Length: 222
Image 1 (cartoon, one colour):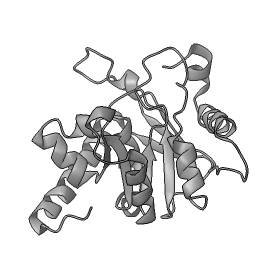
Image 2 (cartoon, rainbow, N blue to C red):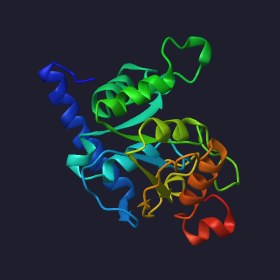
Image 3 (cartoon, rainbow, N blue to C red):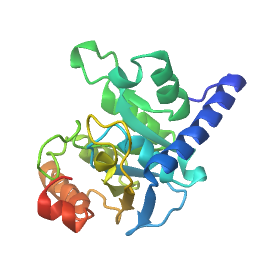
């Protein structure tokens, strides 16, 4: 996944810095390390998903040393839609790009994700699969998080709650609202020996939901 073109690497580095500054200027994202510490070790950050900005916000609040080793798992059909997105997805975020259309796949999505972990990368994933546009706090989790935990039991699975981002830029608005986005990182979990998929996914969902602000849990998804 490493780009050997030095000019493209430099452009990606500059663009990544610009994206981080832009995210901080628009949403003033604040990282809350509630159940873990910001140390450079291999992790899988699994987060709620309500906005296309979720991934860049999580990525931008990580310390620089951690950002360099953290790759989001993202939709290829979105990030390869035009040259600018493709540059951001492939070169800036170094995303593990997954085609959401089974009929178009030439590679096994889980194999690509496991390969990235085998190489030592940390990951950002959204276990709901799609953006949550409902009033439910979370959508049911897909099996991917369980498969990751089974394949790499030593890797910390860190619940990560993104709050207020979809209120900062409501649908149809052009000017962001003056709210602060918070990204809360909770205590790591792992797949227990002998734990079945449904039990683990229920536990993972509860761990993530437990990080939601009180307003969110009382009123539904904000």
